[in-house]
Image (cartoon, rainbow, N blue to C red; front, side, top):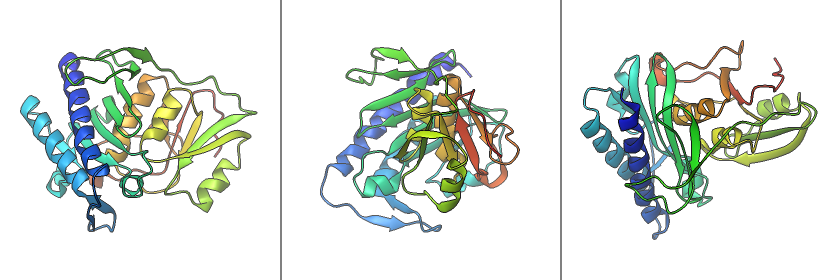
Length: 264
């Protein structure tokens, strides 16, 4: 894969999808439907998915594409693929809470090597450069030209005063019990893949997820966090979280800044 070609395409498609999502978000009431797994989907999810999928297939026709909203893509098995969640945090979108994201990633040999996470309601754009380092872009976010960027890097955590971020919509007693094993100085909740990005920028040290996720939920945020020096590991045994698994389900996982003393 030519990453110098890939990154601008992913960035542009994420921004274009964000515009479409915000048209729905800022418009009158929209219909919320239930998918087969009872999770919500809106016209914004579907429009963003169509836009991103068409753009990726045009630019990279030989690379398999997996997206949340296209069930037929879930039967694919590949070691190298593009993976998309066009609107992560649909519950936050429906409740107009703002912390939802567009996610596009490229995976090779089980590792998310490049990714983009865009939070259109917050105007925050995170992505990996062609060389693999991660940035947050500021400014007008023009489609055809990247603006000013700052390199992002994980924190140097203080295990006596950790900053933890957890899910806003999927917080449960098991998660709280695990967080309780740490000395926590600051606790925040966030929706969608933004949690990975908060660890990547050093705004949080630790993000544990003891709940069901799919690979399209995590791949782009995982790529951004890795490019900022962070890690994502399985909850059971702390091996690196891999991609391309049958069914696309993730195990429980922990995203963190190296230096955090992980608890069993």
